[in-house]
Length: 264
Image (cartoon, rainbow, N blue to C red; front, side, top):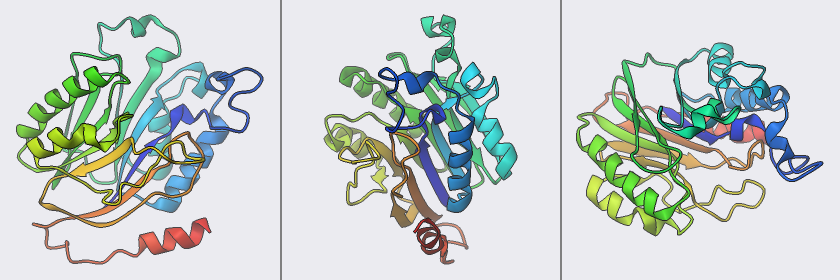
């Protein structure tokens, strides 16, 4: 299966024009044109599963439409989407921001899904989605180091209760480097699909590894790459994987080769 993880920055764009006429002005601009570029890119990648971070679920930027639903409808996916902020957060009273969400899209049926919230941080959502062979967690961790460490502890508890193979994907905001995850990986037994620690942020000149796809031991990573795409401030992560217990695990997949040819 192919997993695409992408922090799309609410489809508000990146770099050129984003800070005009004033810094961060792009954050408030309409997103329809750039969302179509993102949809075109997703179509080229042809993923089975999509983890989307920073999705607009219905503000005026997206003409009151949910971007995750629009992507799912245009490309034929099942989806779940939810705001990043807990129900008690003051953010629910702030226009635009209260529509900021994360989402999980899947070609296969989503057997079960649930939303959990960290006890600390502003961005608190954990999306848990169960597919036939794997459980996917989508997260966007806090900007504060202390909060991130607390969130990782709570995430460990959810993973520990999961019987199937696990993938945790998201924007971890690990500004101190991947060493922040050392204890979490040791406790959970998860591994980083990005074995060479390639950076994904910012997309125009990547030098930080803050986006991660982590997986349990029963999952084999067949391919991992970061396309040079600048539709957001984050570059996307593309991960081909097989569940080792599956009879299809030995099957090949040439989509990585085809994607590189299409992008270049």
